[in-house]
Length: 438
Image (tube, rainbow, N blue to C red):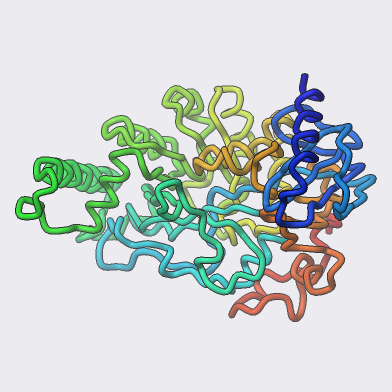
């Protein structure tokens, strides 16, 4: 049945090529890992006008297509990073612990070399977030890592209503606690109390707007912070909740249940202790394998087994980089680490792609190789979970944004003198070849 559908898509494509605006590109003789469905040996994938138009084992490239023979190579969807700090964006300041009106949109440098490093790692979509030193540090931004971006508008993803795609960042635990209290919380209990108070305030603001029924004379003074929290209450924005310890995870779930917002748990270092509770709450979890180098007490009990514990409990689990906690160029290896700790291969690859797309509400566009989806693909030298495998090419919406055979791109991938242009980039430069297992 799947082969029939693949062939049907190919026939439909060939009948429509006459009206296509761009030259089709065909990748042939590749091992294709579509994420949904079984791998396709010696398969073909055809892209045009930024979309996948045909995929399967018996697809014939259309006349005039640019042919890429990938014999011995592997193709899979572009990677989706649910938690990144590429672009050097800043969020909330020290004026208050809860600042939902702050937008990372206004603080990202679209020309930052960190974006090129992410492309070199096969990342095509990223949730770029403000930091975690606040209970709410502001609104996140979902970006497509397109080629030659010169301004933030070049990377934006827009929703059906025309607004840019993104969530909102919350946090608990030690990051937001300040000694002595004051405007910031001094304890975990006070942290939760402050968040509750803000959500109740947002509920009251929403009620006033609703009762005004469009009468400007009855509307409350406009409050950007409250507007953002109302979007959370109305489930229009997902809360990406930074949380580590098992008790902090349960507090986040308690708040979610109380106010009904959608949540993605970020980090969850002690997820293995409360995996059943996470699954029961139907809360997706975005995890990382190496967290907070230099030491953070609340990550002491982090385990490589987090992924398998969540998988066995039936929870949706994805991976993230928290770049530069994990350099974006190493992201693919998250799957191998998870498998080594007991996670299934299929779910580990799913966690790099489709699971993360679901967490960002982008599953209709990215995360798998299917006809009609964005042509976001990566070409690999071998098996995606092998430490020796290299990202050879990264394509975003049908355009190649990284090519390891290009000396400039290779320098970005491997690091060294001249790689990048950001102050402090030397921190992220390596003397060895990232793809060679050094």
